[in-house]
Amino acid sequence: MDDFLLRALLAGLGVACLAGPLGAFVVWRRMAYFGEAMSHTALLGVGLGLLLGVSTQLSVMLVSVTLAVFLVAMQQQRQLAGDTLLGIFAHTALSLGLVLLAFMETVRVDLMGYLFGDILAVSTLDLYWIYGGGLLVLIVLALIWRPLLALTVHEELARVEGVPVTLVRLLFMILIALVIAVSMKIVGILLITSMMIIPPAAARRFAVGPEQMALLAAAIGAVSVAAGLWGSLQWDTPTGPSMVVAAGLLFVLVQVSGLFFQRK
Image (cartoon, one colour):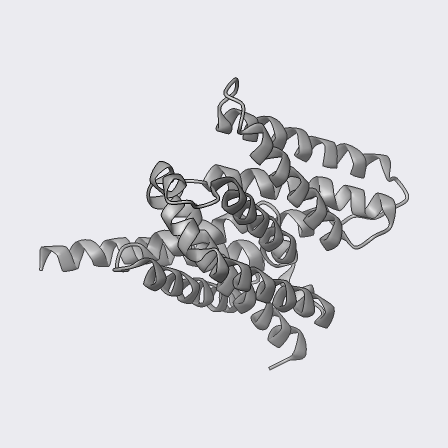
């Protein structure tokens, strides 16, 4: 296997192992729109990174984490609904990022690569980002797993039992921001949320517990990565979107097979 294909496969598998467990909570907590909003914000991070001459992954991470903290603070007020706040910040950040990129006439920007990913261009440094950041994300997720699960099942009961609801919610949002930052080059800003939603949604059909669903989601994501990469090489299609299409096909297959077994 060529080196660039091996790096692409390793990068995709790393993202799948991150997006699966984290995406399980996104599905349980019905936060798909939040993930979409955070991914849109990443373009502002790209623009700021290029403007300041720093790593785009680092700038995306900082901007996304800042937005997560701000959203948690704004959710304490009751004047605007959470989805309204997400819509305001997501579209404003996306538009501001595009405006910043438009002002940098001397900088050549592969906008399609940032939006839809370019996994075949993954470098060894990118792998360090993915696996280093991914290890940090998984450690923190393991530490807050039980409180986050209690918060997901019943927030008020979790609060009564002493769970630090605001802190746990903030940490979870920050983890999503970190995953978006390390995954940006793999499937792109606009598609990363799909990899956090489709595999867990497919796994939910057969999982009998939270931990099993998280593991199944990671496995389905890994198969989607491998299938999308193979399909991209076979038919010369965009690799990131091909992975999402593979995940979507697996979701449909799981739903159909689930209906078949129910009838049996």
